[in-house]
Length: 168
Image (cartoon, rainbow, N blue to C red; front, side, top):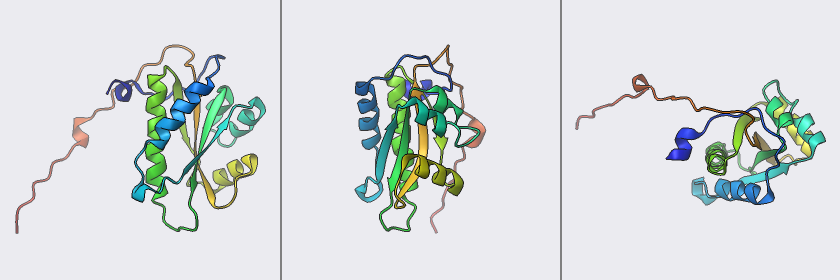
């Protein structure tokens, strides 16, 4: 539970490199996520090239942390020929696992949506030469936090509702 409560979005990173071993652990965590019908539609592109990080960092006004990172994981969904968007749940779970494993490894991350924006999807698709049957889902900038980061307490009792059902 420690990692769940310590996780927070980190947008500034030091120059210290994320190691290949750490990246592999992040991706193993991602692929341990639950998946509808065990389809496991996820694929990942690990971006470490500074020039590409700069380009991906300009995809949206909110993706600038990518340009400040030395590693970004682009999450993708292989939709095959399916019109179902159940992959959204699968990829969401995989992304959360990456975020939690990063905390465990002493890394910081920020998760930035690509889908459902067709413009963002197309920009990422063109930059990374992604085929049409693969959906760019999100980008997760990864690095060592620059400065102290403190998670927020997001618990709000007023967001919890209980319903009692009566037998008919």
